Image (cartoon, rainbow, N blue to C red; front, side, top):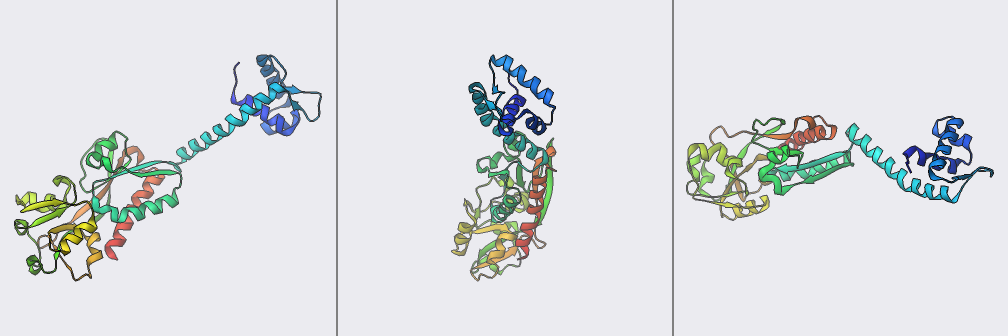
Length: 301
């Protein structure tokens, strides 16, 4: 037996309307075409699907079995059609994110909360385990959005600039370096440097200052959480370099002192990496706009 969706829609329409004429209007076909369709379907089944001499028309036992199938299948088809329409229009999809910047969690969660309300049909997720291989994971389509301060030329990948920020030195107020107007690479030689658990090639203090100067800190301790880094700094257990938006929260705290790196300070830029074909998808474009605005609010607050 060969069944099409139109056959199931026909069975349901006649059952709901009780007559061929009203069912034909519902299905936007002629009554003659509808009768021909039913006859062909009954020939396939080998038995009548309707009791035609009753008013309204009633389904036969065979017709009732087909109606049960229609009531299972057609709602699923309708849901799938709506999902495809949503995908085509950009209302739904997937946005899995990897971050090459631990401190970005400070502003990322408010961004995701706004995006969730604006695009409730988009599947949002943060894929932390892919952070160390984020750009290759993006090209393999395991993730869809990478936040990075280290753009590289990759075929098929677009780096959209988000905002500029300043990595700044932070130490306990009683630390000897608190007397300096700015911090140079050599000042780290006797210091325990607290950093996030990220490769040096993606750590601002190394890429922007220490590695070019060929300076090595006395020791490096990797710490997962910003709050723990700040706690250790306040206790005199090390020094750190953190983005300016993070240090805004301790600007009025007498336990800390912050200083620029080098006389003119360092400037870095954050980027969003996406696949070329996804950059203008509506919810991706909205995510990029939010990632530009939210951190700047925190820098100015």
